[in-house]
Length: 150
Image 1 (tube, rainbow, N blue to C red):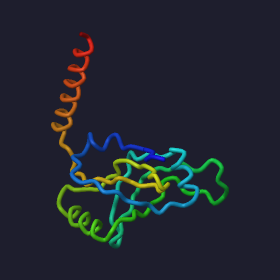
Image 2: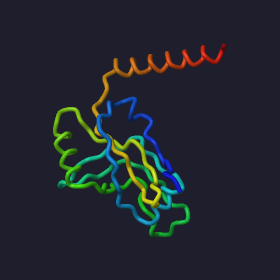
Image 3: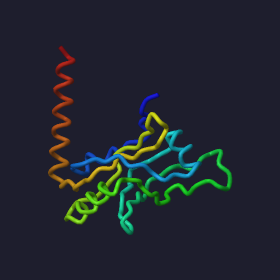
Image 4: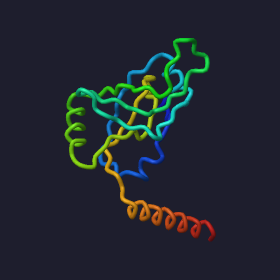
């Protein structure tokens, strides 16, 4: 068995400079993990916040399990992230600095069957940075197009 990529936050690298990434476990209910394995997850619009020294992810959409009963979960509920104390302390000190935030980058299932969330310590990009990225992307695409035409 291999690592299965469930969801990716495509806007993350466009809107933010991501300096560090961490692997975090999550507290999920039974119907949530079934929806995750069915790849019914959306990470856009999600972010992480500290509450009483613990890290939570908010705005992450995990679709309700279609075979779930009245015990089904709420799609956009706040979920606790599981990190070591050292990692939490490092993230907390960085977030207190001006401009840093924590965003989910991707979600995957490990070989052992655990759902993990890759979170990134990010700083927002300015408009000119985004334009520069688009120019580089267009130039790279143009180079590949010219290379294939020969």
